[in-house]
Amino acid sequence: MFSGIISATAKVRRMQKDRQGLRLAMTKPKSWRVKIGESIAVNGVCSTVTRVRPDLQFQYMPETLKRTNLSTLITGSTVNLEQPLALGDRISGSVVHGLVDTVGTIAAVKRAGNSHIVRITVEARKFLKLVAVKAPVTVEGISLTVVDVGKNFFTTHVIPYTWQHTNLKEKRIGDGVNLEFDLVAKYLQRYFQHRSS
Image (cartoon, rainbow, N blue to C red):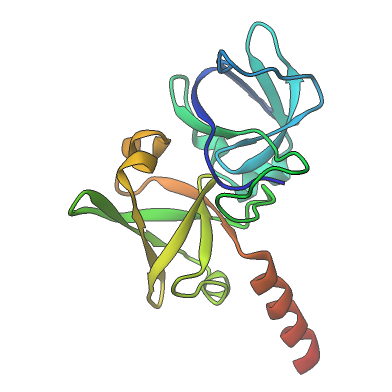
């Protein structure tokens, strides 16, 4: 379980794709103590550490690659990292499970004072039913607040600190971003679908 507060960013060092999925290696944050088998959120994807030296390494199966943007990374890409919460930790963001629902597309970015407004389109409308104004949404592992919702998009405001300390500042129009929606909203949607059928 995570909070959506990014602990560090890292650069992708190596990638190896095959029929079984993807192996991804990246620089380890200097202050981190990590063991093989631990979970780390990589761009919001709950990932198991398979190696710690000389770099952090993760392995992903095809199902994960279908639902996330990990397969679009290239050597040198910046990824957001978060270590899991420990019992007793303060949850500064929101409850994030690292189970990405879908990939959205950055449609627009504009300045608003000292912050940035990011518009993200979502192809499948079933996911937009899980989005509400002032509700949390996780974008690339970052816990953000929804400001506006349209027929095929939602917008969020990103404060300067988050902009400077995550990979959002490197995103361009048309780039895909991993999205995780509120778990309670997903359970409610499932409940009412089952009830109506």
